[in-house]
Length: 317
Ligand code: AKB
Image 1 (cartoon, rainbow, N blue to C red):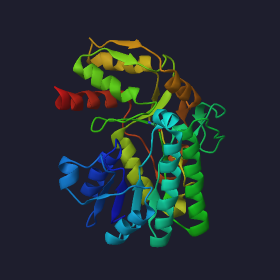
Image 2: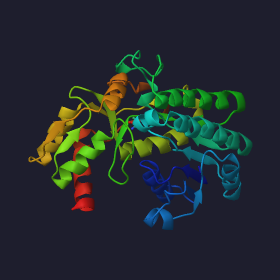
Image 3: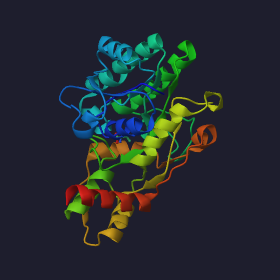
């Protein structure tokens, strides 16, 4: 990886991944791709080039790839699970038509491509405990449908054309730089903002609902390390289960109370998000990622809570 295009660079993952790559990749360029209305600001804008990169415009993508001699594309453009249920056609357009534009540009210009999948690629029929790497994937959400199709299409371009596609299935991501928007796991971020601001948190997910979660530094390291992995060792490509912690809302609230004893939470269940959450794994088996490219998580729930609370106190108070 030398010259990298991050599509969706101002989103929850992109805003941090772009900066990490700019800090860590020697002697190359990391282009921050964005769509009008979500322009990069501050350090993200000043630390490197940025370009309008709408995945629905294949010609514009090809132009950027040629201009900067891009060899790796991180494709982070997506509507998350809850919002994709409200706008299924737009989700299809961005996630599928956008992906095939990227894969075509990658095929013509020999780029590697990372397009993340998600716990959302699984469904009710998937084993929920220790969800295996290779198992039944029959989601009933538009987000899930596009994520399974993303895995298949990315593998197709690898097997048919040799495009170096690789990815992980992200759990819900907890972070403090950029808020997620429209996901089922967003509550695990929003709860920290409420707690640090001294507000009561209204939880949209029922007690007892377990989902895989991960702290952003682990997710970013996974996104970098999978693209640097020795291809000879990869038996899988699109996409690897990665896991670090699984909890339900009561456990998360109890953990936050250890550090903010006045914190309070009540429930107002969102039926759309709850149904989605119940169709997702309780916890994934990530042994293939560990064996094939040395994946390991560094943050458990306690380390995440300590870091999140300290960072948000700095940001908000
Ligand atoms: C969502 O909740 O939609 C995402 C995801 C788990 O893919 N955070």
